[in-house]
Length: 191
Ligand code: ADP
Image (cartoon, rainbow, N blue to C red; front, side, top):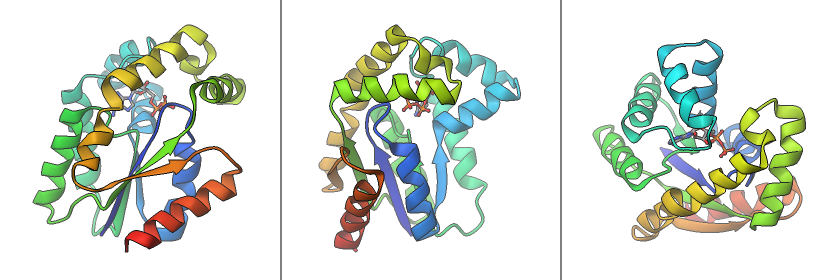
């Protein structure tokens, strides 16, 4: 199996690039942000709980997030591999994912980290707010909060995979196509 973690701060382009990777490698795309937004839309109990965190730009608690992700993984029948987008976002989430995959006799192949500097992220998120309808994109204070949470809780996950020699940094600045080429090259190089 090919199991990729697509990593990077909010606005780095994970969603856009995920679509390219799924198409090329036939992977199952699991975005915890999308899963939460699905629950929000359908007003499930999980959705109501997640909303209270998402609206403030905070992370949803690990236990809740891990359980949701586990069910989504176990639902798949004979997947070729996964692309994890927006997960893991904390070290406990990364540990739980390793455990889950080892039960399925597989593991993370690579973490691809899209690197984009802060000013560019803020511009992209403000721009995305115009079309996404996401309230967490519309408010500069919430954007700043998400970036702060990223630095504090999520950035350390990079070290978790670097310690396993699985972290590859990808320059996230450039055209969408050129960034896709960089991601493909990193995967081909590894195989
Ligand atoms: P972004 O574009 O900011 O990366 P996402 O669509 O991935 O946003 O996620 C939106 C929100 O959903 C996050 O700000 C957070 O509140 C919640 N969320 C998504 N993934 C996770 C996760 N792995 N752990 C905790 N909370 C999460």
